[in-house]
Length: 151
Image (cartoon, rainbow, N blue to C red; front, side, top):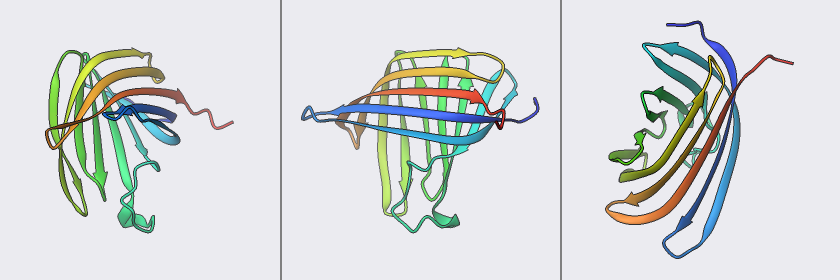
């Protein structure tokens, strides 16, 4: 396992729901990167993902991006839990666990582009999202990881 390096994670997500309504979200977080067994790992706390509680330690959500081998897996742990895999041309299902109940998710990844160096990189994903078997939205996810030099 390589040494953990501080990084800045910039995430931009956009979507269009089944009724044609569009929306987007942007977030920036500090985190860490390491390389292990041929995969990049990026770990950060995602402030855009909240469970509706008071923001205390018990309501925080840690996000891990596992990148490599033509896939990206998003893992969330804490007040909310999720493991979602993105792989071009494939459909993957998961359970989104919340304090209010579980939700069945399915993603069909139409495009996945990963441009990654030693620590920094960029990921672009285009996918369809189904919630409890019903089409929810068409989505785009753009993630940039930069080394944090602490300037």
